[in-house]
Every structure is written in C-alpha cells, then in structure tokens.
Length: 113
Image 1 (cartoon, rainbow, N blue to C red):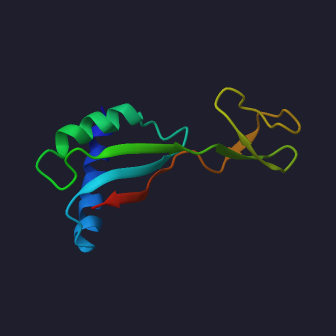
Image 2: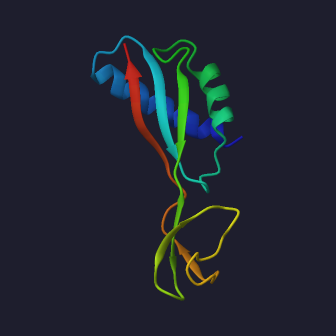
C-alpha cells in the first residue's frame, strides 16, 4: 500500500515539471528503481491510473528501469554490483558488505505533448 504515497509524490512532481514547460499532456513517466526501494511497478501504475484521472497525466504509462545493487566489501575493500539472489562479494565471497545503492526511486524523465 505504500505505493500510493510515492505515486502521489510522483504525480505532483511530474505535473509541476510538465506545467513549467507548458505541456498539454504527459504520456510517459520513466522511473529508476533500486532493488531495495520496496516499490512494485505494477502497483505504481495502478495507483497512477486512479490518481491522474482529471490531470494532464491521465492515461500516462509508467516505464521502470531497475538499477543493480552496488556494494562495498568490508573484507576485500572492493566495490561490486550484485543481485538480491547472490548477496555476497563476487571477489572474496564475504557477506560483510556495505550497501552503496539500491533504495533509489527517481523520476528519470517524462514524455509530453
């Protein structure tokens, strides 16, 4: 259910950006999500369909790019990209990791008419 809150924020920000550019309609919103953002793209789209009905974002499509999880290994002192299924350093196999990215939820761009 927390997707409704983030969707409200996305909608507000996108409308503000679009109106500042004198856009008549927003057709696409491109988001960047980290694997630990906790957001489900399908839920964001569902809530956007409801929240955007009487706005310039009515009918907008949400496109999501998922970024990899970046970590720093406290054992071998290297940075690496990993996925949620293999949470260990790919160099030394330590699980003593510091997360450097993964919580992102960003508006990358919008497409307007």
